[in-house]
Image (tube, rainbow, N blue to C red; front, top):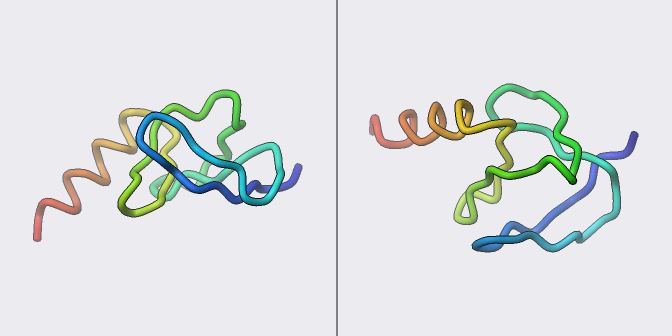
Amino acid sequence: MKEAKLKFKPGNFEIISPGDHVTCKVSGKKIILSELKYWNVELQEAYFSYIEANERFKKLNEK
């Protein structure tokens, strides 16, 4: 398994370097590209599920 490098855009992403997965910024879990649904365009981060995305959102808004 090779990690892909992606550019996250609103509604989609561009593959910069090919691979079959990315790593969740919050949990460290591997996310198969075909299952990737959650990311942050501004931070260029991927999230395993809505749970990790919500955790990240809450943490960013604590400041």
